[in-house]
Length: 122
Image (cartoon, rainbow, N blue to C red):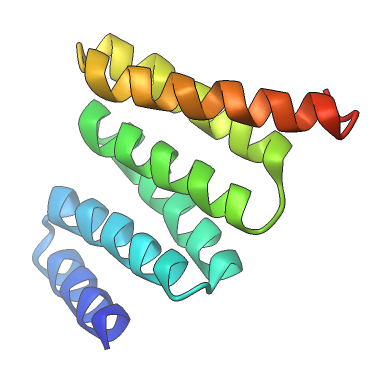
């Protein structure tokens, strides 16, 4: 149900030309899809959200999309891609001055790297 609401909101933002609103609903839709364990769809949606936020020079929206994309990639068993996304999120959180979230993402990044090392994937 949440996905349908987010998709409808996204379409309304698009029709009215509100690209910032549209980008935010892409992020929300991707997050809802990830929570519903529809991870491939979530990854596609969050990638689109990330690209749109980047195009709009919305660093905060972009970092949220990178963060959620990393978690979705991790959820579908792609720790290498997840580590790349989380590293990008760390970089953007630091660039925006959000040291608290950067520290949280550093913690996740260390755990991902440990998993990659243990699996011989690094």
